Amino acid sequence: MRNKRGELIYDGDLGFDADDLDLREAVLEGMLLQGANFSGADLAGANLRGADFYWGIFFLANLTSADLEGTQLQGADLKKADLSKANLRDANLSRDNLGGSTQLQGAILAGAILQGAKMEGAEYDSQTVFPAHFDPAKCGMIFVERA
Image 1 (cartoon, rainbow, N blue to C red):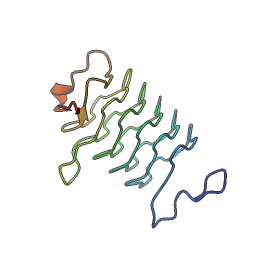
Image 2 (cartoon, rainbow, N blue to C red):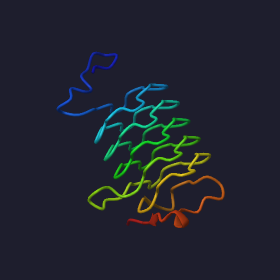
Image 3 (cartoon, rainbow, N blue to C red):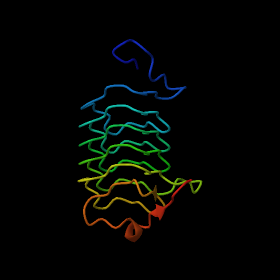
């Protein structure tokens, strides 16, 4: 798969590299993209429903109003990602198979839909912004503050 500039972003062997790409309103529903790199990508309003992003990298990605319902995000790096108003209903953000945590340090989840989301073991810090009345400890999330 190539981006608009003709650069290879997915070849099946090396993985999916969408670093800093404009993927607003893209449709990646149900895709298997384990370990894909979306660092800094703009995925605002994208349809990512039911996709598998196990160990995916979304550092500084814009996922505002993205549909992530039922996605697999175990072990994903979502540090400083903007998930404002994203639909994370029934998404799996729990630990990966090796016990590694999904990382939400500095992520913005204001207005996100989190009903049914599995978040046990996911890490957050004092910079993480949650929806009003959301209690991360009740979901089994882990507070970490790194020096």
